[in-house]
Structure formats: C-alpha cells, structure tokens
Image (cartoon, rainbow, N blue to C red):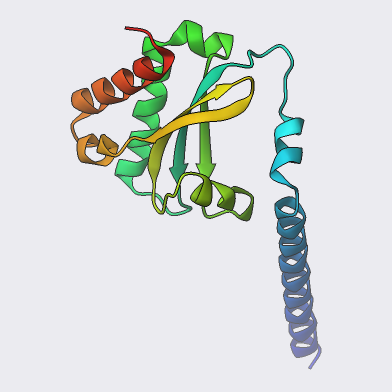
Length: 162
C-alpha cells in the first residue's frame, strides 16, 4: 500500500512540475513576442557600427534538413572567405532567423517569404533599402561551387565591389 501511494505522489508531482514548466515556457514566449520590433532593434544598436550596411539573412524553420543546414553553412562561409574586411567592419552583416518563432513573424511579411531562403538587403542610415530574395540558392544548394559563386556575386553586387 505504501509503495502505491509513493508512486502515485511521485507521478502527481511529476505531472505538476511538467505543467508548471510548460506554463512558464508559454508565458516567457508570450513576453518575448510582445516586444516591438523597434525595441528589439534598439537593444542591438551599437553606435560604433556603420549606419550604411548590407545584411545577408538566412531564414529557416524549426525543422531543418541537411540541405538547409548546408545552405546556411556555405552562405556564412562565403561572407567569411570573400568579404572578411567588410564583415569585420560591420559593412556586411549576417543574420539567421527562425521564421517559426513569433518574434520573427514580421520577416514573413517584410520579405514575402514562406520557406527557408536567403535574402540580402541594404540599409542606408540604418533604414531598410533595396532587398532581394536569392531565388536560385535552392536550385544550386547541391552544387556547392555554383552556390558559393552565386552568393558571392549577389553580395558583391549589393556591396558594389568586384
């Protein structure tokens, strides 16, 4: 009898803790998503960074395949290999965002995207300017050399370098 009671109390305690953790996680997620986009941007504002720059975004979902992970890795490699001085100076920036998270939903409307993709955008005086979705990234994702060349050319075009 005592063993059954101990097991019952243990299970009840486990369920209670699980529910409390789930509730805490949901409240935390709601709190994070209630921040305005402007407040998030102010939090990351660094006065030492240039006001004119280009951002290469990689947008992905929560569930990611091997090709998705390789696209991200190779895009970052292009930045680090071909544009290291611009990257270090903050003229070229890299941002990865999970579009399944509420705090990133605005990207879906900003760039009219619905799936994993690369987007490049210029910012002038910290204000968004021209942007382009890199459509061919998926087509070339399994052709590493061509993918890298495509991404390099698009970045160079936005940075206006050869």
